[in-house]
Structure formats: C-alpha cells, structure tokens
Length: 97
Image 1 (cartoon, rainbow, N blue to C red):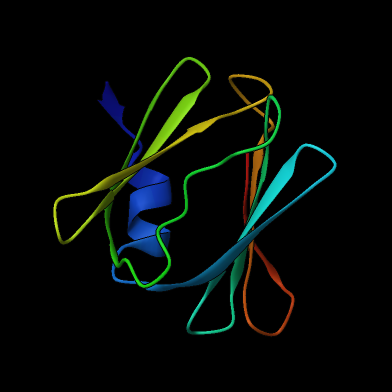
Image 2 (cartoon, rainbow, N blue to C red):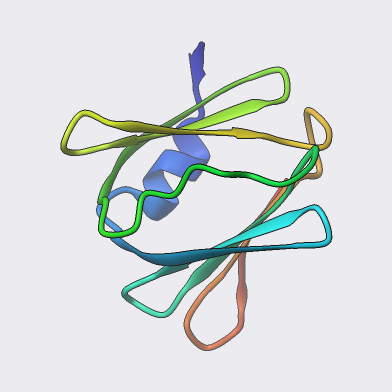
C-alpha cells in the first residue's frame, strides 16, 4: 500500500477526538478542532478515538490511518479519488482529493 505523503504531512500528529457516520460520509474530528470528511462506500464501524495519526496510506479505495500506538484505521472510500476533505478549525479548506 502506497504512502499518501500529502495527506500524511497534513494530519500527522493530530489526535482523533471522535468520529461520526452520516449518509455514507465519515467525519473524523481532531483535538485541534479540525475535521476530515471521507466519502465512504457505506457505514464505517471502526473508530480510533484518542489515536494519534502517524501516517496515511492509500491503495485503490482503501484509506489507512496508521496510529502511533501501532493500530490502523481502515476506511473504504466511495472512489479512489475525490473522497477526502480536510478543514481547519476555522473552516478553511486544507485538503481536497
């Protein structure tokens, strides 16, 4: 699985405060009040609340968030691209793919 360097550089070190699912979209809220929204291929059951992101990998429609503690949060995206968006605490767009 290939590393997503751009996404890793944006969210590495951020800690997950919580997750929520709604209408095939997973929203990951970070403790710095930024949010990552992922268009998913259905409901996501795994959550890594409290995990701190170490790296992001992606292959096809699988997006993997590797945590500092060694766990991984795998997310099935709706498409290979145009599925991830990150907004800063002030609502500004930081990333869209």
